[in-house]
Image 1 (cartoon, helix red, strand yellow):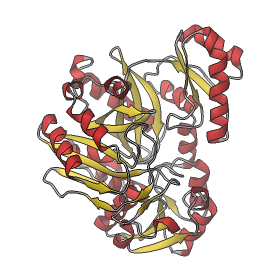
Image 2 (tube, one colour):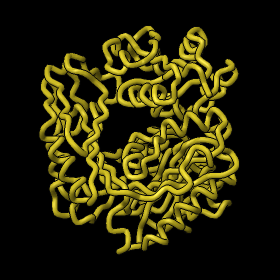
Image 3 (spheres, one colour):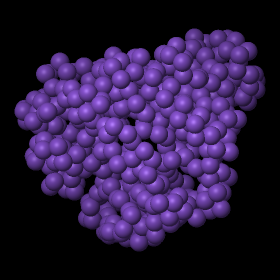
Image 4 (cartoon, one colour):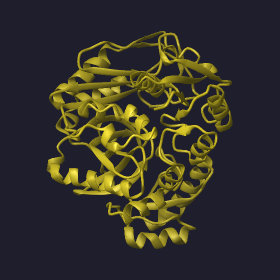
Length: 446
C-alpha cells in the first residue's frame, strides 16, 4: 500500500480523497492554489502543498509544478481527482516518469479512450453496442459522405474534448457545412485540436452510465447511474438505480449491457476505476464515451452498493487484485439521488462568483453532503462553481428524492446566487417523480 498520496485537485473531490486516504491509513497531501488556501479539506489532510498562483494554467493544470511539488513532498502516489488533468495522458506519463504511481489507468489507456473515435472503434471491436457515427472528418465533403450511414439530423463533436463543448447539430444537408465549421472552430479554441466527428443525433435519449472497476486482467460493473437531467450537456442530477428502465429494457438486459461494458474494458487491460457512458434510445444502448477517472457522481453508486469507490481505486493502483478489493457479491440496496448545487444565476445558469456570507449544510438522516467550500470563502470565476453535492438515500426512490428536496431547502447559502430553486423544481416535478427522463428534460420543464 502507498505511504503518502498527493492530491492534485481541489473542492469536493479533494475532501473525498482525503477521507479515503484516512480510512486506508495513508497520509494525504492536499495541493492548493492561493485562492483555495482556506478550503475545508486542507485541515483534514495530513499535509498541504501550495501551488503558487490562482489561474488554472498556473496551478491545477500546471504539469511541471504539480509533479515537482509532489516529488518534494515525498509522495509515492498521486490522485488526479476529476476534471483538470485527470484524463491527460501526458500528465499521467509525467507522474509515472517521476517515480510516482498515477492513481488511474495506464497512460496509453487514458490516451486511447480519451480520443472519442478511437474509443468508439475499440468498444465496437470488443462487442459493445455503438450508435451510428463516423471517424474523424477531414472536411465538409467527408461529413456529408458520413451522413449516408447516419441520416439527418447529426451531431458534430470534438474528437478530443468533453463537457458538451463544441457540440453542434445539423438537421439538414444545408446546415451541415456551417455546423462543421462551427464545431471545428470551437474544438480548436477549447482543446487545441479542431478534429471532429459526427454521430446520429438522438433528440431525447436517456443518458445511462455504468461504473466499472478493473485490475488489468478482470473487470466488473457496479450497476448503472441515470444522468439524463443536464444543462448544456453537463449533468445536474444523477441517481442509481435508473428509474423505470423495465419500460424500455428489463433489468436482465441492463445488467447484460453492464457486463458487456466490463468485458470490453477487461479486454483492453483496464486497470482502474472508470465509467462507460451510453445513450439509450428506442430501447437500444449505444456507446457515448469512457471516462477513465473518478466521476463527480460516484457517491450515488457508493450509497446503493456500500463500496467505497475511491478507496477501491487507490487499492487497485497499489496492485491489489479486483477480487480482494470488492466483496464476493455486490447487490443493489436502496436508492440514491444526487443534486449538484452550483453558484450560478438560476435563470441564465451562468456562474455567480462572490463571497459565501452564509454556507451551512444541514446534518440530516439519510443525506450525504460533499462540500467544496466553507462559510466565508470566495467563489471565484476561475474554477468550476460547484458548491456541494447533496445525496439523498432511501429504501424507495420517492424517499431518496424527498430527502434530497428537504436537504436542499435546509441548506443555508448566502452571498451568491445558486441553482437550488431549479433543482427543487426538477425533483418535485411530476415527470421526474414518474421517471420519464431524457437529456432535454430541463428544456421541457423550465
